[in-house]
Length: 215
Image (cartoon, rainbow, N blue to C red):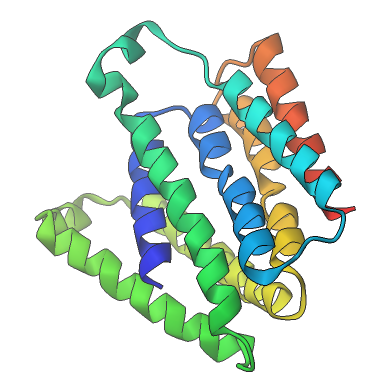
């Protein structure tokens, strides 16, 4: 739960500072970290060569999507990247710790316990950073979409932890992270974020590498 909370805090901070089509691929590199940790800790070595090739594809695709902008030469311009990397590391730890924690436990109460920890940590951060005053500035539209996002997150976690309980982490996590491709397409369509041929190839490599690991 603590790892999840740290991951989400880093992720949303990165998202507020950088483009979706750059933050999301870095965050989803947690797939690679999770697969490598699952191989080492859980001995999930079936189709090892294929999994490693898939990891390479995701890493190469991510690097191709991170294009340096003019403002990225200063520390402030690069800050989003470090938050995104932090999100990826904590997300990988979340999957591995959860795999151990839900052994022999029903996935629904396990998800509820984890969510309580994340909720408590999130509110602690609100008061530590003295940003509770911003609650009154949230518009009705923002409240609606934040609530819908929360419901989608809850449904995602329930499905994810049930899958993680009965399946191998090195296969469940890559399938879950296929959301990166959908997110990038939506960022292009609705947020009008610029895609170059290089970033499109990177997106395809991420998708191909992910699919390769679940075959």
